[in-house]
Length: 434
Image (cartoon, rainbow, N blue to C red; front, side, top):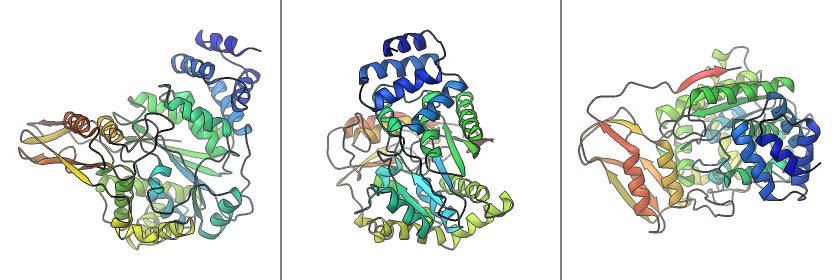
């Protein structure tokens, strides 16, 4: 079997069988097939797609490339949550502790930023001392004690996906529906989960720009889960403007902390409560979804979720006081304001442009070896539908070096559209799949 033949077959739209998929996944994981050939194969998949059978085979092969966690010794239903990536999407930092405070066991194997979207690990690692490189034994021990642990992908779990994940980011193949589905589901199914809640983003700030594509991705992932006898639900949610007001790693930790203190933005709070409720319901803590919603809200209002996150931060070597004293987090040294040239209503905030501007200042990666600057980012001062005056501040850019700030400011200014008429309100949660 030759890799070049598989590239050609996929380029021509043919279906690869399990042995062929296993051949290139195993070969690439072992370092026997070079990046340039897998890059060509990924691009062929990007343009030609994959059948449901191929996606299930790819998912199984990536799971089989490493260990599968056995969490059966920990009592309780294991439920995770995953987002397909958005701008300002810090819901994992809110949802996971809310669900864990309700009694759900939440094993979170999280990712890093891809393209213009942020990663949960990058956000958590902006907390001084916080460690995500725990051993699997430490992971299990903390889950048993606190019901929640955040770790990164280890070399033992789905190593094939770890390599492909980095390569997709730098070969413009991130948006491929089959590759996203198999990447997410291989990681999640290798965690030893019983159930999974998915947040599939759609809009300018998401990898899926069209709702039909987001629906296809959601259905594909729910289908993979069902074929593996797992309960999976997916929400399709709007990402045409950033979620909340903060974009950037330490800035998003601050906003997540405010939200867990019941002082967060309305959109972020609403989505976080709905995702947490579905985790609580699938975790069999409550008999109905309505009761799960009530419990999630109670854990927000009484501070249970906030206290849970502080416990997890301390257990993983971080300083929990950073959630109270934001000066303990990395802070920017410069601020640049972007103002509106005219009065009217904010009609559009292009989320992708906001994410790209944040990346330009160092909050994200252009190449897989790039370092993250945890202090930098963007704080919105207005959201879509709000009335503003000429000269009103639209947002503030927080930076630690001058390089890229001017370009970022221009990009952010172009991201905001102001019109004479108030735009129609958009739904935040568009569909439920599964």
